[in-house]
Length: 358
Image 1 (tube, rainbow, N blue to C red):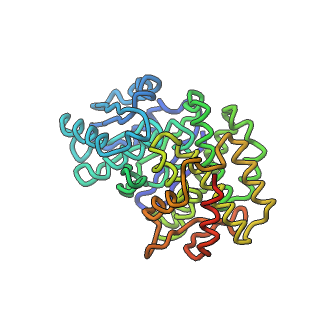
Image 2 (cartoon, rainbow, N blue to C red):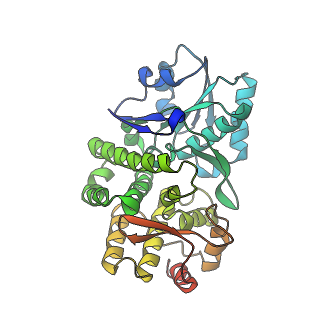
Image 3 (cartoon, one colour):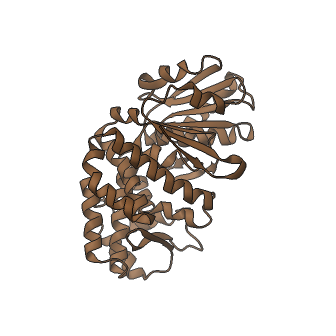
């Protein structure tokens, strides 16, 4: 087992990464305050891992909320189900919520914890690659709105993150690829040695090799923890973690949440960011081809949906949280391994990127 620490002063917390650690009570129990626990999971994950988790919680009063599975359920109705169960079972301010599932479950459970009685503790037990390398770390929580992804939420850090690599063996291939998109992101924005390792290791990642996955999760979380420690609330460098996301969120919203997986949309979004960076003269055509080869080798799309116009992109991108003074802010590549946040770019290059994306 490997351990990382997210350094946020008195709100610091560990990330445990290992195989078959989901049910280890010694990793979990020390981070539960009080006697009440509410597990939030979904219909897919519950039959696989709920009982195993509950075995380590015999000394607590445990309630469970099982939500429908899918990005389209990341909404206020699902949040209300969590609130209703907390109130019905009389959970107090010392309750601890546990998110057992992927990024959708983690984001909603965290948002419920941030807002229930003005904030209670929660724990992340991510069961998808995307959530283990990205969404479970850093304290971003929230829900979607038909007009924009993650537009309603709060920053609320977990007490601990427990990433069990064994859960990834039950992931559909499409979900595994979606998680690899976020792994690639860390290499592109700040870690060239990691990017080169991903290129060499892509086959092992896709075949769910446990040692390879562990390293991918560890290095991804290391990169994210370092950035979050510098900029917890995304007032500066943390926005670099959104490489491909401004384009990608527009794709998700336009296509209908869940029709394109988040990682698939981010893969295409990173390709669009790389294309625009090449047109600006910041990276070479060889670099662009290298990015395309890697994203394609992860079985991710590199083209946006055929039915999506440049006007569609602008409509949804204009709602992005990073925008300032009505300017669309983008994360682009000054070089591979060196990203920048900017709203200062020629509009014709931006329009060319949108027009050529599909």
